[in-house]
Length: 130
Ligand SMILES: [Zn+2]
Image 1 (tube, rainbow, N blue to C red):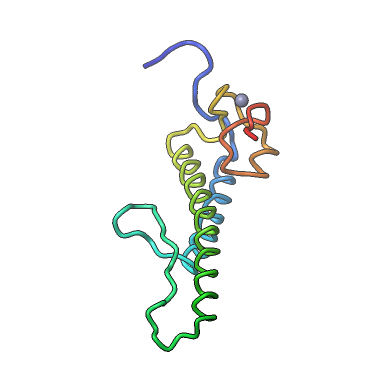
Image 2 (image 1 turned 90 degrees about the horizontal axis):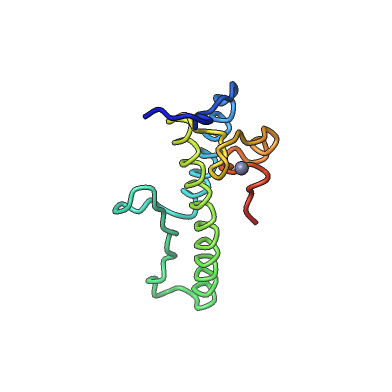
């Protein structure tokens, strides 16, 4: 389909530079996730926080409380890391289809400074949320 008006395709020359940043961050996050969670075998791309071993009958109740606390902490971090990983995967998908670096609202190119701050950004500064 061809139509008039600005084409929804990236004009950036340095997409590969941002792609590298995205891959580097993805690797780092997957490493962090692997330390506190494991991949959900049933849902692709989903991670679950690793559960503490609460079945040890010799466990000190304080240790059990500690590990529950650690588990809750892991769960919170896991949610954040997983959300970030999804953003990165979405950005990498936009690289694939040639729409990387374009604001999803106005379809204009996202400011390079913004992409340097967040290579997974999908809105320009003007349409940034929050
Ligand atoms: Zn915009």
